[in-house]
Image (cartoon, rainbow, N blue to C red; front, side, top):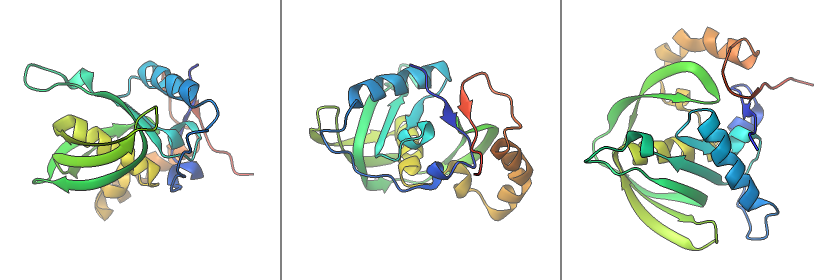
Length: 184
């Protein structure tokens, strides 16, 4: 089932997410729905807060970046922790399904080691590089309540303030399902 993506301004996007226990009801279906939602939205990663869940879960599929030198990665990360980020930071233009129509250059480390549980709750520790590392860092930020725009300079943030405000008010057109936060 395709789920609506939460838009910038929704408080869940700023929450530090909770650990998922192995008895979490409906986890397999949720993961399946998240992949379907991500593909329908033309994303390469999706974190649980983006679909309204405050749990430590994110998925990635970087096969869109695959070429002869780079192998793509399709994976589910549960209860992830970053063990190490290394290498000279490099800039790349990032976007986010929760912040549509805004793309900015963000510096991130090219290499990382991450510890996480797979869908069977087996612990793994793996190294990733390049685009896969970047997407993992972006999605990991989501489960920590951090958005890619938080990495921008004060000046850049000021320049996009109006666009962010419009997104938070639902004044943006997207070709995927989106849910805008309404204060009660």
